[in-house]
Image (tube, rainbow, N blue to C red; front, side):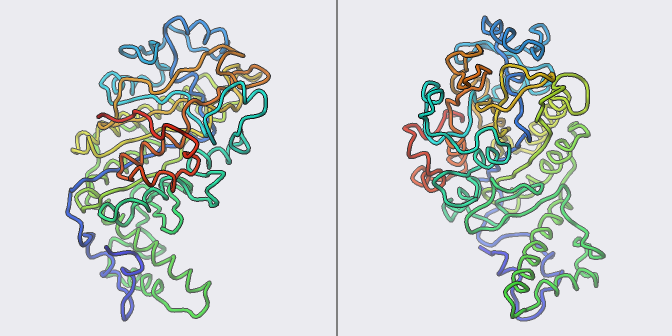
Length: 448
């Protein structure tokens, strides 16, 4: 397997044509056993109480607790069948993904959040539970659900650590990929992250990575191969070289990609997923085996004006998200990637069941996540659905504001996803140290 250091090393200057000439990887057979995990993080703590809503008798509890935030029952998009003791509907803004649930391609994970160990409402209220630090903090809880642990001792994420522990036969270059500046989930303890903006970073000043023979491209690559005695300068050149090598691969892959015909919408989430959907078949054809992609998107810190038609309301953002997700799934199927791609939609925490004073909601804990794709055992809700009663059996808030104590740990979801990628269960505790406290390490998220 070629790593980036080897790719850049030579007896003389590395030329642009050397980097751009091809994208095959020795020892990897094209199309064999490709799997891509796409993690979409909704920034700000999305209010999942208004995403997945019971339509049976529990709707009355929801309506009483949510007050002005409640979605009218008549406007809900009903989901087929029943699951975990309830019938459900979706926010009308999520109508585009409802068919995926009915087609058993979409599942919800109920009341999930960061946990150190399984705990109870009683212990939380009594202050005797071991809980993650800085609950209700955006930055800290984002890091926790993406892989930080009170026992890990570093700031890497579960995606990055998991990729490092794959069997050697499943490892390949450009495996941990972020599509923006966020990186925790795909950060490993000793491996590099690749940054893949939509379309690739083709232009570096006057250098165009799509044209290897140009003087500007050759000069850029010679700069990346300069030798320095100082550690700082040497590391800078090495990092620059790695970045050029990554972008070379991405630019060439995007040049081969076919633009999807599905309607992804015009929002940034659609732009990113459209770009990713176009290039996944190229990665598969190049013989890559495993990749994890991280996308951060949205502004869901809705302390006020959560409902309505404004650009920053949850209602409007849900429309953009659902359209992009449906188009992503449609494109993956059309490209023959149906069983190769799994997408997960997560957020750092849920929000209070009780509305806030400004037509919004406040930071909470447990939330509902989504998983989508052919391998997913869709058409159901995994876990246990919380009681939608303020001060009820799942409310861990002394003020009875409806902050649910999670019944599924985010580490359990991560372990399930990594197991699908091929990480042996014997390595789970190396990725998720806190799973030592859980009798059940995974959840039933995939088809048997």
